[in-house]
Length: 242
Image (tube, rainbow, N blue to C red; front, top):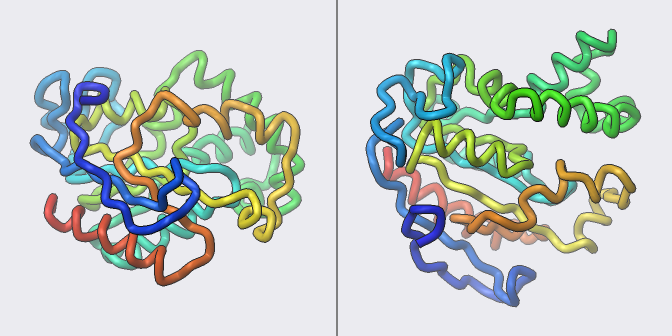
């Protein structure tokens, strides 16, 4: 029992970098959509959900996390492709953050969305600014991100902090599943990752290194077949909840 939820056993698929095993762990989602540990939530809102949650409650919410260049966005896109855009939508907490930051600082919002040097030039200040917003209101960016999401499966591709996980669990209960995307440092370096002080040692990168028992751990080290097998297990589990 972890955090009031029963976790299923992990299925070992092969050798890798997580606790000596390459594995995908899973928990069968339980409860009604929008019904969390704090009672029924007919409008997709629970304690902490607030007025920003949409009327349509999701059947599954996947909170993806992982280090820079681990491939979170790629995994999210693969999940949407396999489930279909009518079933699955990708939500990014950084979208509302970057939009508001761009407005307040007179910057190009679209250029902040891509993996460009333009974005990297503002990354540290965006992190600082975002932390100030979260301290004032931990659910600020979460509420903005879910606006208009109507598909039954939501994939949040950039979960970074315990406060993010707590907000979604309070708002949507047992339909929330945590997914950790992992890759070795060697793999990340091949994807042009370089350690940056103030970024890679900040809460935005390290906030979920501990304190969460992940429902799924997906290894993304460049083996397309192995990644496909792991994603298929997750997709099949999701289909059973729809």
